Amino acid sequence: MAEVAAVVNAGVDAIGLIFAGQSPRYIEPKKAREIVASLPPFVEAVGVFLDQPLDEVNEIVRSCGLSLVQLHGEESPEYCAGVACQVIKVFRMKPGLSRADLAPYTEVASAFLFDTFHKQMAGGTGQTFAWELLAELASARPVILAGGLTPENVGEAIRQARPFAVDLNSGVESAPGCKNLDKVRAAIAQVVAADAAAFQQS
Image 1: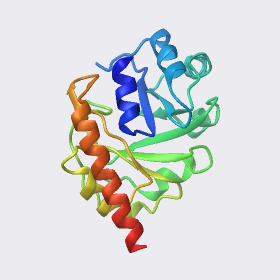
Image 2: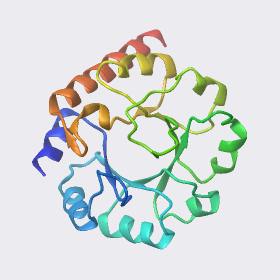
Image 3: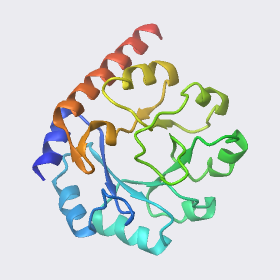
């Protein structure tokens, strides 16, 4: 709980709680409830899921008080429409991903998150992708950028991709599930600087 408080005090807008059982960052719903209850106003709690039964997802959403869910699997638009809170649909940047792949989700997702494609991993790869590819997708929803972001590259990623938000995970950890507060603060400083620069140019 102290780590969560420290990360929140560093200035994050949201925290991710991973409920996908195959992840080394998996958290039990009971523990997640305690964390969500400790969050101050305006800090969102995002549940991360991967091809899990819809009723299981909605039970966790309600019992934990999640603000949003982040869906990393092959969830259909119909599945997304049945989720009990706002949905962030994740797309991995594999060859051939196109606007046509995104279109069916436009009405059921509040944002699209783009992550690095990896054959064996659905996230947390620590690897980046070519950020300029996002321009070709011209998303109709706010874009969240993920995939290998670190304090060293997140500023440049924002300058190139101009996302609505960024999602950092392994790039600010000392071990899976253990955030490095110095890295978190350094990353937030880079995000703030990149946002300020973009505002001055607009």
